[in-house]
Amino acid sequence: MTVRKNQASLTSDEKRAFTSALLELKRDGSYDRFVTTHNGFIMSDTDSGDRVGHRSPSFLPWHRRFLLEFEAALQRVDASVALPYWDWTADRTTRSSLWAPDFLGGTGRARDGQVLDGPFAYSTGRWNINVRVDGRPYLRRTLGAGVAQLPTRAEVDSVLAMPVYDMAPWNSSSNGFRNHLEGWRGVNLHNRVHVWVGGQMSTGVSPNDPVFWMHHAFVDKLWADWQAKHPQSAYLPAAGTTNVVDLNDTMRPWNDVTPADMLDHRKFYTFDTEPVAAASQR
Ligand SMILES: [Cu+2]
Image (cartoon, rainbow, N blue to C red; front, side, top):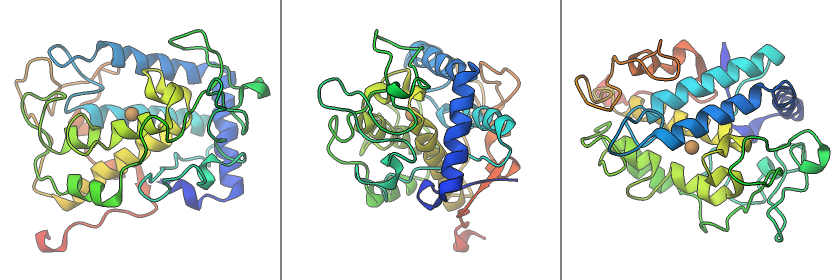
């Protein structure tokens, strides 16, 4: 069974196994297909039209499935690998071990944002940015420049306290848990982290930066934490909603998976720290 761990607790061997598997998926071409898929959904998901991957209730189940596919690809390279998660409320500075040269490498240089150290630096010749929105073929970051602070634990807790999963109009203007976690409304959690990292992470081709997977693995864990906290709250909408993925509708691009299939992460993996259901509700 796959156990997703906090990136801060990985051993050097685990970090090496994870980065090596990423480099192998890059080498064999499968990595870039994930970037292409993500960007396609970023481009096509709109507030007033069909929306699946983002700015909609299925943001969470869509990314859960997307990460599962990516993790399965990593595990075909090295069966010992699981996606780590980055708790950005705890590891919130550019000095975090996450950004050390033995893991993801650090921020970009001032002149052009180019990441110069770590396994994903352009100079290694092993991490070219091929699926891109401009001509620059090198990984870029501007840690902490686009927005000063990552979200705090108190801000996360304020969003986890919201009892309703999502609300009409089921888009970036919605109230409720999903849109506050996604970040279009309120204190802004997920979107803000993309902006804090900067570079490709703040664009539609954000999976070009391997931190994408660790960021989304933590967003995914926050969904599990929210479910444990609100066992009576369900995925919404239940049925009959135009342009929106209802509970039992299939999701593109897979067309064989519904939000209902994605609700229980324990069918697929557990976390090093599993959320504990609220005692008063058991
Ligand atoms: Cu994201």
